[in-house]
Image (cartoon, rainbow, N blue to C red; front, side, top):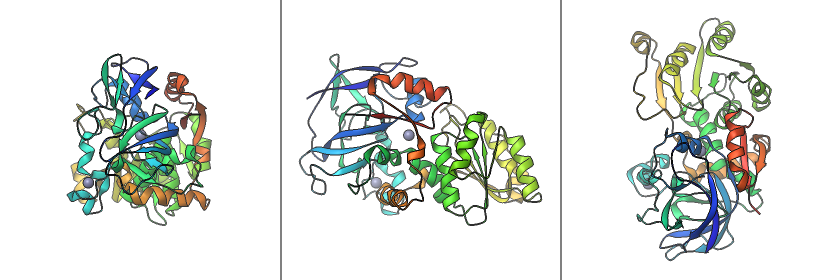
Length: 369
Ligand SMILES: [Zn+2]
Ligand SMILES: [Zn+2]
């Protein structure tokens, strides 16, 4: 069928919204009619090269919609099902899936390659095969994806809200709750108050943190951070250290979660300085593949038993975490409506990313007809 999509044809270019040809789902795949797609920072990383991916590629990996067609061999999904797309597929049978770590599923190796899991392409434009970000490509009103990327949800949840839990919400919430293991009474610092950071803040709040200190140089985000549960907000790590040191009588933070736009080696040093004994630094932000320099006090690392841990998809299992988060939304604990700063049409995608770069958006969302 013919549809349209936002394609990136090369580094540092704008998204090009144009007509594309979309194939029917093959074995184990489904076609989705998307209702909405979040504008996540990771798609901006494709443009800048911080996440290397072959071009051309259709962006977008945070979507929800309704199943339009079902390919051969798909028995647990039907036309009309409401679904959220998970940016990491879970096969259910690899070593990591079967040990309860679906976020590390072996199929994840394919998410920045372009083609579907069988190595062939579903989208075509200008006579070329076009890849799909995270094997999803939600910057299109229709897409074809693997059944392993799809999580069925209850039909009463608004799809434009559900879309957000496929990446940003699960990643931020899980960074605090799963990877950070925030406990009641913890003092938590969140570095960076974008779409991921706000969800780390609300995750820490729901987990019972005593204090949550939000760091962001954009002062306009402080009030929003407090709305999501931050007890304090400030511009940089030095200011946060003063707050945390005073509040804990020098014991410092239990958890520091790095959710900045891009991870830099220097942030690790700052984050470790904010942590007290047994303090844990969770690194959710993505650094450039060539960034290999990190400074830390090895003396403090050992003697204070500090920890630095990476976090992918908030260490969440998509099939359990996504429905759980939507239950928390329905029960009034998880704030999703407040995350959406502005909605855009697909044609307005470049403006949406400009607004993100300008620090105007917590989450911009593309809404389809
Ligand atoms: Zn994302
Ligand atoms: Zn797996």
